[in-house]
Image 1 (cartoon, rainbow, N blue to C red):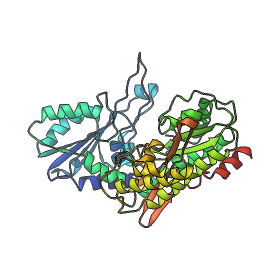
Image 2 (image 1 turned 90 degrees about the vertical axis):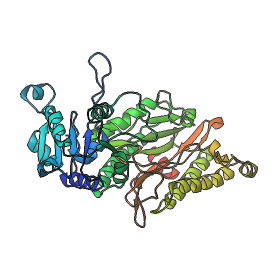
Image 3 (image 1 turned 60 degrees about the horizontal axis):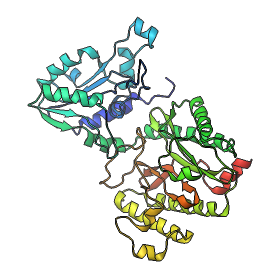
Image 4 (image 1 turned 135 degrees about the vertical axis):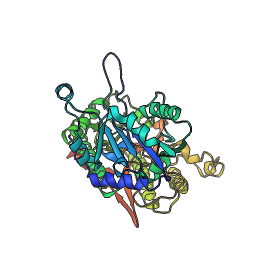
Length: 429
């Protein structure tokens, strides 16, 4: 395995915390992701389902976790079902976890092979009164294919129609949002790798390079440092492309006088980093570009100071909007009259800053968490304000990942060059 695994003690605690919130005499089941086909005999790279990964650390397909804290037999309270390795499989694909390895990785002593799942699960359901099924209620999820979890859930609902059905996701949204020290350290590794990639790119950028060449420089550095690559599809947009929020073609030439917006982050051990930096193609910002850059930086720093335990995320975004309004007035992009006559549902600043400022980050780039609940210590958020001036072919967004603490925050990307002067100095030197 190319990344450093987290301890089995972490996964034991995660499962214990989840089971502590289950109803009496209830059983929960979690499934790994499918390997998704493309065409002919092609497949996409395997990406483990985040919830079963958070509960077990098993980064392997065809895995099932069953939790039954009130099972009569203590051996039935935690069961992991896994693929049985064999000589032929080892030759063609590589060996899978054996039972000893699975126990060492997860802390689960009852390891069974996946074909035995239905028989064992049916036996346990005779003791249970409620069934916890998992789903993906993420507000930004767009699901157009049937996942393994959805497929298995449908089969279980049909087979056990008279059982009370509960949902695992609300519990996991609360638990997964609070990052342990081990998780923070894994995220810090992802941020450190992202830093190395950015510093490499600063030495590479010049007029005439293409956006995809910059993407390749990041990928080279990420892979050589143990990452499996980008945590999400990278956005590398120069000139007007920086004003397209989800620009991912990365196909144009970077021209002298333009600014490149680079929204990239490395993955490490399935944990994500999410960084945005803007750099001048020619190595120097002009006065207008620097003014807009510094305005975004001011909002970013002000927003960081607002994120504290107990703060409402709804109120936070309103306050960030007020910070942005002040900067846009200073830049002459909006007027006092615009602000006085604004629609509260779409304030004047939204013309140039139309997206949210922060989102949860962790195993998923847009990680799970309850947006209607106050911020807590242990949450990790991005902070990513931006100003997009389409008529000037100029888009500036800056983004760091920050950990909320009891009395403030820790910037996991505080060591990555951010000031305009520092960016310029590293590009020319």
